[in-house]
Image 1: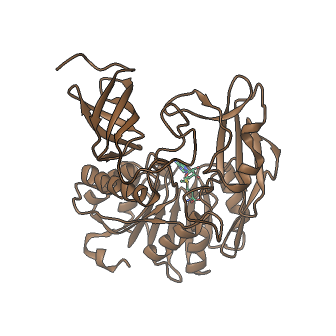
Image 2 (image 1 turned 90 degrees about the vertical axis):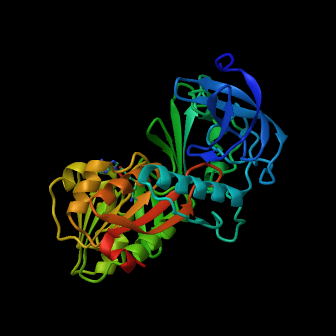
Image 3 (image 1 turned 120 degrees about the horizontal axis):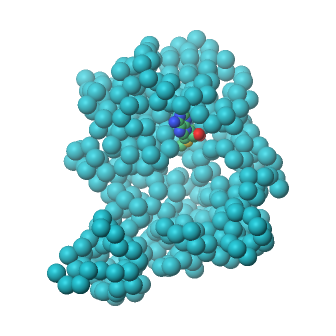
Length: 407
Ligand SMILES: C[S@@+](CC[C@H](N)C(=O)[O-])C[C@H]1O[C@@H](n2cnc3c(N)ncnc32)[C@H](O)[C@@H]1O
C-alpha cells in the first residue's frame, strides 16, 4: 500500500456500482472511494474531498471514458464543488430511475437478507399538467441558506458553504418566479419558499411569513387542506395522489375497518382511508407536530371516524393492541425503528403499509418486522425527487401465511 489518501489527492479510477447517497464505488490505494458526479463504467480523474477512518469521498473532476447514460446537467451549479442539492443531473433520467432501483435492491439484500427484490421506479410524470416529463420544476418546498452578504443560496454537498445561484431548474415554476436567490436578506439565516397546489407561493424568512399565505392551499382529488407553511407536505406536486393510490391499493381498506395512520402529518392518508372505511370505520392518526395536527383537524373535520392523537408514535404504540385491520406508517428518513415495528406487529394487523423516503431504513425495519412474522407482499417505488438520489418506496407487509392476499 502506498501513501495514505488525503483531501486534494487526484488519481484515475474505474467507476463501479452506485451506492446509497448519490455516489459510486471506486477503489484506490487500498481504500474504497465514494465518488460523486460519476457513473458506473466510466473512467474518471477524481479528486479526494474528504478522508476519515471509515470513508474516502471524492468528486469526478474529469471524465476520461464517459458512460452512454451521461448527459449535460440542466444546472450549471450541479458539478464538483457546486450546489449539493442534486446528485444525478449528469445522468439521463431513465437511468437515474434504474440507479434508484439498484439502490433499493441493494438495501433489501444488505439490511434484510432479501436477495431477489426487484422494483421499478415509476415516474410521477410532468410536474405541471401538459409539461415535459424531464425531472425538472417539481420542487414545491425549498429552504434556502443565507450567506454573510445576505444572498439566499443552497448548501454545497456536506458543507455549510452557501452556493450562490442564478436559478434552480428543479424549483417549481412558482418558486422560480419568486427568485428567492435574487433578494438580499442581510442578517437572516434562512428563507423558505412553499408553493401551494393553486400556484400561490409563501415566503418565510427565519420562520416569519413575509409573503403569500401562512397556510398553504393543497388539493388532492376533491379534498382540500390548508397546510402551515412550516409544516410537512409532500414535495413533488404529483406525489400525494400517487402515494394515496398506492396506500389504498395495497392496504385495501373496506367499509367499517379500523386503521392506524402513524406519522400522519396533516392527515393525507387518514382522509382517504376514512372515506374508504366510511362512518362505521375508524382511523387513529398519530402525529407529533402541533401545526400538522391543527391542519389535520381543519382538513378532516367532515370525517368524525378519524381520531387525531398528538403524540410520539413510539409512545402511542407502546403496549397498544388492536383490534386494528391495517396500519399505515410514513416515518421521517430515520425510519420507524425496532421498537415501533415490534409494537405494530404485536397489534396483529392484516396489512402494514410502509411509506418510506429512505430505502435503507425501510429495509432495516422490514428485517425487524420479519422477525415478528411479517413479510413483504408488495413493493412500489416512485421517482418523487428526480435529479437527486432520493426515492419513495411503498411496501405492503403481511403475516407470512397471508402474503398472497395483498393485491
Ligand atoms: C414523512 S412525513 C409524513 C406525513 C404524511 N404521512 C404525509 O404524507 O403528508 C413524517 C411526519 O412524521 C412526523 N413525525 C416525526 N417523528 C415523529 C414521531 N416520533 N412521532 C409522531 N410523529 C412524528 C413529522 O412531523 C411528519 O409530519
